Length: 198
Image (cartoon, rainbow, N blue to C red):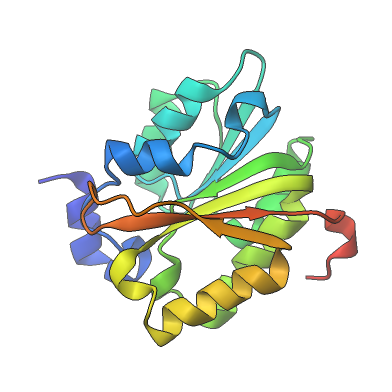
């Protein structure tokens, strides 16, 4: 049994899925968002590191990767596997403060593996506003959602939240080779992060 499976059994409202994202979903969430050209990519909720590895593979020489993980053991594992990643331990809503604490600039790309669907709306709002504050003008935020949830009220509300914060929100084709099937939201930021209130 995987580490993620046991963490899901212990803390289903924090972990959100019992299986890591499939290679197909990892490729999709890191595609068409500028990872290859980015100077700094931030990842929220790297978990077991399957998306992290795909980001890492696509980064250009000299680019930096920062990750925010709430679970101490998962954070330790990520830090051990990727020695030159900056790993922050804490809530993703504080991403901008964490980047500032290490003199890192706003990110070109923020990628999230967080289970937004199981978070209360207040926490969703805090994290999404933190993402906006952490992106450069024109930067991109990518996250995924499970197909079966997109037509439920919570899924519809989440899409509306994204559209209220980002001028451009698009979706990928469905990644059927994932359990459960999922798709990616790609959200482009077009204003200065400093102009957005928390």
